[in-house]
Length: 65
Image (cartoon, rainbow, N blue to C red; front, side, top):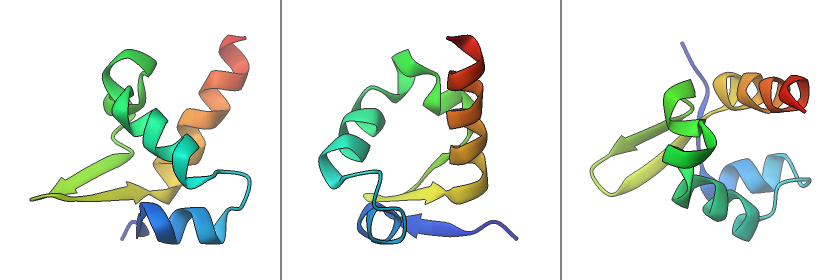
């Protein structure tokens, strides 16, 4: 079962990712590949982050550079 966290919870648990930074990534998810990774889950208006998929996406960004 995936670990799903709200943006606030994710930022509190992983302080390297600020609220503003996460919101910017989510806002641009269709252009930065985050949407295709499946890391962002929406239930109505609630936005949740799948922790393991998000960090897999981060690692993929590192390899692409």
